[in-house]
Image 1 (cartoon, rainbow, N blue to C red):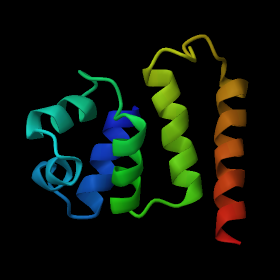
Image 2 (image 1 turned 180 degrees about the vertical axis):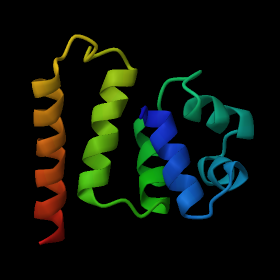
Image 3 (image 1 turned 180 degrees about the horizontal axis):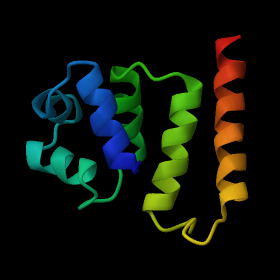
Length: 102
């Protein structure tokens, strides 16, 4: 899942609309839609933190989204990673989630 797809999934799971997020960030609905569909870069720092807070994300979820943001910005290319590398990334993510819940 991409940064935008994850934001959309979390937003919908919490019953928030595109309008809710747009109003929170003082941006247009198409702007939020474009971020969610990958037509725009992920939200800037201040907007991203407000979205994370509104979605009530824990540290593990924030870390996962930050990883996806870095990938979306082209600062990390994971296309050539083999299965082992992906499994290690997922294991690391799961460890972060376990530490957060304890």
